Every structure is written in structure tokens, then in C-alpha cells.
Length: 374
Image 1 (spheres, rainbow, N blue to C red):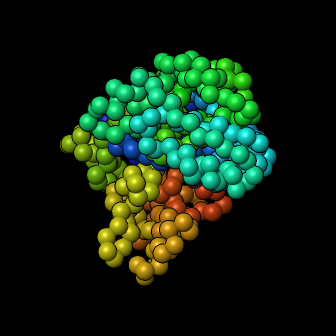
Image 2 (image 1 turned 90 degrees about the vertical axis):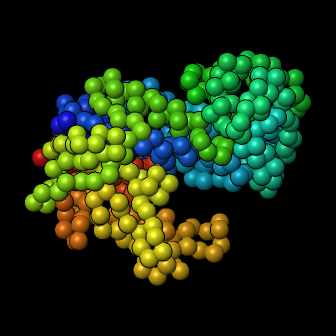
Image 3 (image 1 turned 135 degrees about the vertical axis):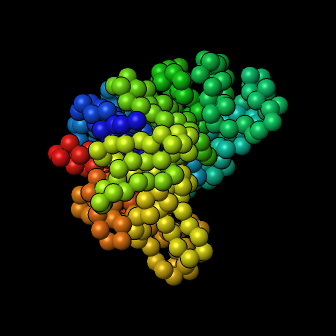
């Protein structure tokens, strides 16, 4: 099978690349193992302090609602981080003290929403907190299943019973001016968070939970749908296992599912993410990129890969694939002419492109611009 561009990785960087290239008239294919950083998405696009119109247009075309309001966002542990561009249902505040009295609401059986951490962090900012747990019969069936109750399971139910949740919250409210709920609404119906805000007579803030991220999965679903509407191919549940490189250029990709049927293209984008999605792998002696064997920037002293203080920035998260200025992947110091690298697999090798979701978007756009200029 032949395409104009083959993209390895179906997360934010891969989908932004694929949609952008399809809109420009290219035929693209994305190879996705299924798991990516969007499953950990906070709801805010880190380091996106300046937002190009092309980014906003891409999200609008996919039906993704965003807002831009530089400030801070609330984390699942009750701390705050700087943020600007975010999904519509992710609240941003000018300062960490955004309320006087807060009602924190969780659901019986749901263990991935840490109400005590939230309350402790918010009270440090001078806000009074009260915690309540709702017992909903609709969720009792989930507790009887063989696996733990996770955010996606709850979200599928919440989109059907959100009106009941609103009624329960209205009955619980005393003199609180703000209600905090876990971000488990709007997985399949993006209008639900807004409807909840309209129905509750207090400010409603949706706080992040442990992964998987409901806003992240919803974002991925909408971007995949947009890619397919534009005519792109999304190979779900497959994995690139080997690259055929001829005269310094990638000729084709071998995948686990397609066997002897290689994917050929004029250009390739590597957007396989970092360690979680196996874009980078490790052994006791090195960190390596498994598909092309690209050069990786990391400290040769393994003891320097991590900081013993768990909460500190971990050095290994900054390691990534080396590229030239045009984001061509380097192999033994030489660029592969038609291979571009985008997303978190870059680590901090290109600090000019930002970090987190901002890095994914900006690097994808650089790769796309390079391809379209050829």
C-alpha cells in the first residue's frame, strides 16, 4: 500500500499531522498501537502561550471546543500549574484562590479521584472545603464487574444520568459558591459539562482524575473522526516493527498486522511518543528508539536518569530523539532525508517548540510545513 505520508503514532502529534496533510491534499495513513499521551491529557495544552490560527481552525473543524485564558489550572492533587489554551470544560483561573467555599463531590466506588488531596491543596490557598460522596445505583453495576471502576466506565454512564447528578448536587449545596466534580462527563456528548454548569446554582469546576483521561480520549475520538472524514487512513491496534531504508531515505514500513504488505510513502513522520507508548525503550545500559534506531540524547550514567525525590522533575523525561533543524531524524549523526520526528519522543531536545501538548502541536506543524514545501 502506498501513501503520500505515513505517520507512525496516533496521538496528538500524529493526528494533527495527518489532518493537516489531508487538508492540504495528501493521502496519509496513521499507524496507532492505541495507547498514547492523550490518555493522560490534563485538558490544557501546555506551553501554548501563543496560539496560531491554524491550530484553532483545526480544533474547530474537529468539533473540539477550546478557550484561551492565561492563568492556572487545578491538578488532581490540589496544586496549580500555568495554562492558557484549554478544552472548554477545563477551568482556568487568574490566581490559585478562585473561591471562598467549595463542595467537592465524588462517587461511591470510584477510587481515582483524590478528594482529600484536593481539599488539602485548596485549603492551603485559603479556601474552605466540604467533601461529599454520592451513592448512585447506576454505578453499583460497575462495581460488580471484574475490573476496578475507572473514569471511562463511569463516563459512559454519566452522560446518561447527568440530570440526576445535578439534582443530587442541588440537594447537597449549602452556602458553597463552587462545586468541584471529577472530569468524567462529556465522553460521548460534548454538551454535558455545559449543561451541568447551567443546572447547578454555583460555579462548577471539573477536576482531573487518574488516567485514563476522559477529555483526552474524547479529543482523540474527535480528531480520528475528522481524519477519516477527510479521507485519511487510521490503522488502529497496529505497530511499526521495522523500517526499510535505502540510500539514506525510508522506502517502506513493516507492521505487525500487515505482515509482508509494506506501507510505502514519499515521507514519514515518527510520532510514537515517549516511554509509555514505547516510542522510547530502555535497557540497563541505554535508551533507544526501536523502529529506525535513531540517535537518542541521554546521559550515559544511568544513575543520572532519575532524581531520588519523586516529586522533582525527572531527567529521563527530558531525553529524546535527536534531529536536525528541520526535524529530520538522525541516524549515526546523519539525517534521514524523508523522516521527520514530532511529539514527546523529542523530549527536551527542541526546547524552542515547547513541552507537553504544545510540543506535540508545534512539532507536528513544523514537520507538515517541511513536507509540503518539498
